[in-house]
Image (cartoon, rainbow over all chains, first blue to last red; front, side, top):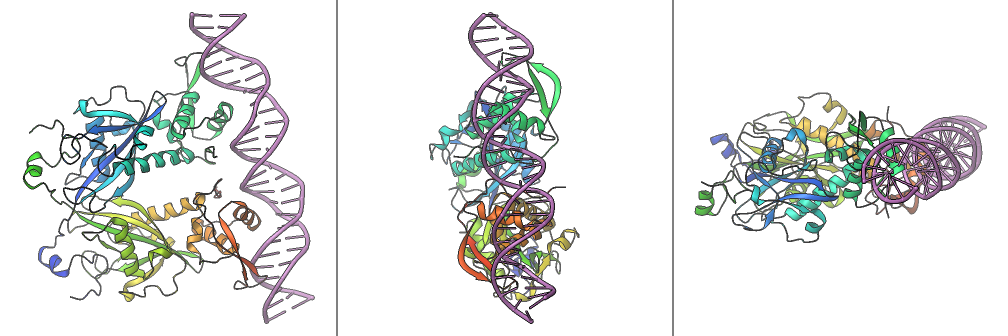
Length: 250
Length: 250
DNA sequence: GGAATAGTGTCTCTAAGACATTATTCT
DNA sequence: AGAATAATGTCTTAGAGACACTATTCC
């Protein structure tokens, strides 16, 4: 067999292709979800209890196998809806990374693409499916226990949280954790919760309201947080922030 | 069949697992490489000519199937070495994204994880393997022709270039395009080439030399660019820039 | 009035933008 | 000397940090 002109796909040899014109599947393809939300000023992640081996009884990120006619994002959106009842139109959903170590699943080769979902506080977590098995765990607790989650899900969660923290700096994505209408102080508490810092209210207010497209006033106000009525805002149309929201260092 | 307690992996049913304790493979797993470098003040991408169907004769990103005992990054590093002769220790190599549309390869389901590689100007592109099939293409030319590349490689390249452009803002990664020792002006031309802008030499010099860990003086100088000898620098140990290098907008 | 929360004024300080100037090599 | 390139000086300006202050509700 010559390899000349056979650069792109080395492992499959000419014979395979010539005879069947199909490729031999070698892995199962899955999606896993890092669903982050904020609950009582804590960053929490959605987890399920595994009912089968391997890792039976252990917590894991929700996920599942990709169907034959599905794209990866579709599969992630479907799993998200099945696990949480949240429609993907109401959340921010983006691809995070793909994990494919040969031994990451003892049942055989599974390549999983993780998606990061950021959602407002879930009113009724998990209307659908297996409600009893779904939990919201405080992220800092889970990260402190490397074996709390099945498979390589601790690493996936670590990567997801880091992505979320970074994205708050240069995108208006913090608003994805808020309801459709929110106050500046609520938005600030998102930053403070995800970053684990405190931010100066005056400077934050100035930054948010003067950055074009970050938020738009909705016209109404609320007193749900007590005190003086706060103006309500909705998400703006900007996709990135220039300059970025600076995260306190040191 | 009950789905209670069977949350994580829905598609495989209990029977499959019980009988074989293995998962049924459903896809072939590949890696593709977006290898970017700079050649004569142009951002160029490494491409190969396909020698087999589908897309025989079309250009494509280099890549190949993941071996049974390989992790994804390993496979990417191996393919990189095979296609370019570059050892992965000499380049920046990071996971870009994964593409898994059901029909992206007519031979069957192929899920491919793309990696982004940034390398200094290749002295002898492709010492190994199939040198005749390897080309360096100007990125702007390729991006202007949506059908120049096979499969969904135009999208992958688009995503890779965008990632590279963004990373120059908040990381010291521009130095990955330079040789081990480089001048400030050479580094500036990397930014100008990748971003397609011009930068003020004074302000750039100040930014680079005052940001801790961005670059370190090597002690020597060069006149390879003519004129007054320029000080040479090596990469520093910073992994992010604070504040970011601002990309001119508008 | 007092507590609680929202929102503003404003001075300081850091760093980026603009652009002029000096320095060191080569032919 | 003149061209080419590297490096620096410095004034202006945008925006972040610090923190005091006022505003509007509830009880």
